Amino acid sequence: YKVVVTDYEFQTLKPEQEVLSPLNVDFVVAQCYTEEEVIAVCKDADAIINQYAPISAKVIDQLEKCKVISRYGVGVNTVDVDAATEKGIIVANVTDYSVDEVSDHALALLLSLARKIVKLNDEVKSGVWNFNVGKPIYRLRGRTLGLVGFGRIPQALAKKAQSLGLYVIAYDPYIPAKVARQFNVHLVELNDLFRQSDYISVHAPLTKETKGMISDEQFHLAKKELIIVNTARGPVIDESSLIRALQDGKISGAGLDVTEYEPIHPDNPLLQMENVVITPHIAWYSEESEMELKRKTAQNVADVLSG
Ligand code: NAD
Image (tube, rainbow, N blue to C red):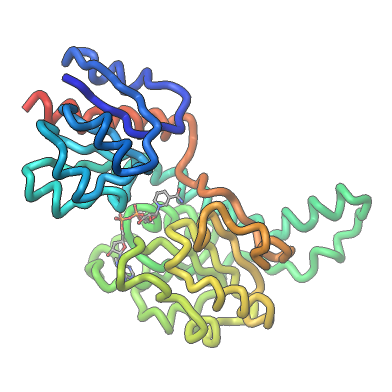
């Protein structure tokens, strides 16, 4: 079988090779940016492993014998799934490789802001040893954490937050109340979540419905102490509304692993704010989750090729 990796930012293909070696696979690793480049290398491929390169309807139309397109990660936004399905090509993704990592990372962003770790660290390193510069800091126990979306990651986060003494509420129109009750989490409407929460962590997937779902209206309802964390997708929060809310003191801080445009533009005002902590879309990563992602992406290919 010819298996093409259309683009690749990881440093080894060992896990993929281990999974696929029993099938006698010939690996071709390319760096495709355009549809034409993908077509050139994938035309006669049996399977495609994809990260960023566009697998559009035009590309799919040219594939002669491809049976599966397997993506590293959750989103399949690089693939025209309808066109693939129409041609009988299976589109596979990996949904569950980093639940521990992302829920840890959301908590780390929240704690670093609530405890002012980054700000205090910067002060100490600039020669200031004075805890007053961190004031005010509030006790976490007894405060309310609101979760936007209540899928796998926020469910894991809820347990971790409850162990710190936080009361957890969530907004998710598609999750049965029974599931929330099992986690001791109370479901509320989105605007009520903003009224009631001291901290909010965003975990809704990016869809037409969720794009910009958090904007001025919600920030106007928020407590002044609100710290908001986003490890889902940047555009779920309307970024200009977020910037306004932070500049006007309507909320007190933001921890972002994702931004509207990635990488973030160097002129973005968020980069100048000391109450904003930003990481470069790394919440999913640990050595273990990366290996798991690679193995599962390859396993999706193996499952289809071996029937
Ligand atoms: P999941 O698929 O388990 O759950 C998604 C939840 O969102 C579901 O319960 C669904 O009902 C809910 N939802 C759908 N539409 C909604 C809406 N309009 N409002 C509120 N909730 C809505 O997802 P997950 O594993 O918990 O992951 C959540 C998101 O985290 C992913 O969609 C992905 O964008 C993001 N993610 C980020 C990283 C990272 O590195 N930063 C890594 C993995 C996942």
